[in-house]
Image (cartoon, rainbow, N blue to C red):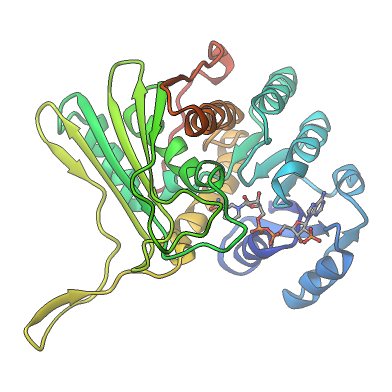
Length: 345
Ligand code: NAP
């Protein structure tokens, strides 16, 4: 039986998810949509030729008995209320990041979910479904490089607009590394310090660029993560894990290599969307399949959303103080203690 999806927020990523559920993946069907901009909801239904009800708001959509799953792709500050209402109604939720804009908000969702007695929520941290990250994690988990000691990660974008301010390097950019890196090494974060190197001439007044985050884990792994959002040359994600017995690298995104005019060269992606396009497909397919087979999503949980929020708060504080700031998580509830697995890649 197909899972019946209701989508809250028909902007860019909302439409992309509707497209993949409708045209690429199996086992799901979009039966309801809503957006504060009702024209956008209507256009989406027409664009994808959906047999779907357009609701005035998320409350009405969640109340529809035909909706099994609520996809939350509205803007960040609206996520918490929608996720809470959906969880309280016992519906499954796929929520794009952030789960909530505050750690307290994430904790309210964690508590509501535990009250329901089963995992209902998956957070859209799609890097865990990228085949390169999956291979890197396998290498680490199988002990190929021994105990991880250090991580060096890079997140570069060609450029950002005038609306991008220093804090967004954490909440919009680093947030993906925040989720992926603790998952990669199976450890929790302990502290973070931020250093601002010499600023690039391409950055506008309101953003420090580049930025270096030094994050330490409970077991003492030190992670150096560079965020450089006006690097000019392309979208570039790198990750290197240095262990006691060897080093493991995130595979480069495949690109044809040419030998021509005395040069060996290959292309670099210009847009982040293409880098993780396959990962989004695998992520939502896994969400559908896991609910079908196990009755619960298996991907990033509400607790992972909470970890991301607490860590992001500490990173933003560290940007402001220049000091080493503690990352203090509450004790992980047993409810979330079973580690999530991505089985489909
Ligand atoms: P977007 O294009 O601005 O779309 C958001 C849509 O939601 C807009 O149509 C907005 O309407 C609507 N909206 C806002 N508040 C709403 C509410 N309370 N109820 C219903 N609809 C509401 O943004 P986007 O790029 O699609 O991003 C959406 C979310 O996905 C963000 O949280 C973003 O961080 C996340 N995201 C994640 C990834 C990823 O890599 N995992 C990638 C992209 C985006 P108005 O335009 O009229 O405000």
